[in-house]
Length: 120
Image (cartoon, rainbow, N blue to C red; front, side, top):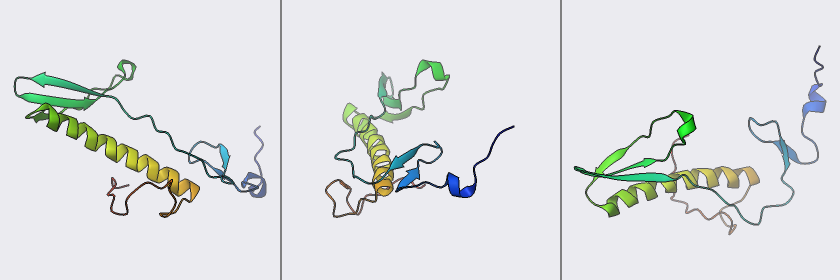
């Protein structure tokens, strides 16, 4: 038989909050000094019809790469990767600054007010 906590016991205490979906508590007392993000790796292929790019997928996932292209030159292929990385980084950083309550004037914010992010 499982024991269940009362609602009062389950609530975070001392300025802690629960990380979404993890059940782990973290404190918001001190702001982080920096944010570090590992970004996705990409693959590029040169085919007869042009350059193609895709986010690299680990072999153990049994997922297929989603290729985009053809691009006329390597510069445009690289710009496509850069756009994908920008959206990934901006989305993740937005979640971080919202979680920590970092305002637009804080140097850790780092995003322009006009940054357009992926629809949530």
